[in-house]
Length: 465
Ligand SMILES: [Zn+2]
Image (tube, rainbow, N blue to C red; front, side):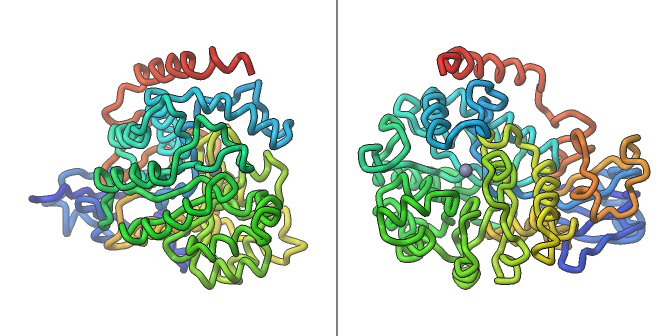
């Protein structure tokens, strides 16, 4: 079957996102089906007769689509919830209060909160979204990732679903209410079902499943051992939270730090990535690098929680692979990954003098794009090259507020930042968002449905907390 051919022409610049920090000018891009097939000076000469669509990208810069490596979509309806304020609460009080709210979620709220999170991501240049769905109150049933898949399908989002779980009761030291626990068998049986239903391991895949037990302190040891075994049997990846404040309890419980504990349970390797890692030590950077284990850096929760700021230069010198994550909205209040990109850049710059180094703006863009693609095993994503996915976004350089800031397309996103939605987002060769509107989606109707779902499930009930 003939695949759709699209030409994008007249862009001010195309930021490739490669190791050479290439920026192309006076260049057209040719896309066939899901992938980029050519860059040339005048694509109309060679491809004009066969093009199905020609997109005029005048007064824009084209960037590689951002890759979000850690999120919890179900938390989207607790954004700006005044009764639960992360920075002003102790971690224990915050957990106790927020889990009372998380217990309320159901299939409908998962659908709409995922839809809203993905909309925010798409409108701010993100083309691949990973989500870590570990919240399974008994009454909500097992079809929560299924509803997320429905939302991703509607929006045209490239979606990687982490099927999470908590298995350890509070009586044995976890922080999770008993009505949100599952057994390891129950968890892995549902992973198996989801992999069979949705997982596509191929190039340009739009749907994947990752086995993602929530965190070592809230699970039985067997959950991690069996997850690692099961995921490798199935050829899917592994993810969890690690190095985010749990090392104290882990040392008390097991006599060792979490990374060592995970390594001894085979939960490290090139098919594994962790979220946060701000507790990792320089010795552990080398273990991460030697095992090929990736790290999702989530700047917003580090700032809001007052946690240490990752030493990215030293981590990179050790050979670690790092991606960017906005994290769930309980610790971010936003799914805007462009915002996280700039926040991460500023946080690193804060320590540049004492560390003697700081990621350049272009490096931070690559962490947010190809870095994320790499730690999730998706080498065909994250940069704009022939044979790679046509995942990209356009920034409008004609916006009044950007006048005088267009000296360097590569640095623009991290240094200046782009406020408001981007001009266009393309995923797998399809325009999913352009000029303020999602493609083929009734945004007003969905906004009303989402708001009334939030009111029913969260706002009315949570006023008690
Ligand atoms: Zn998280």
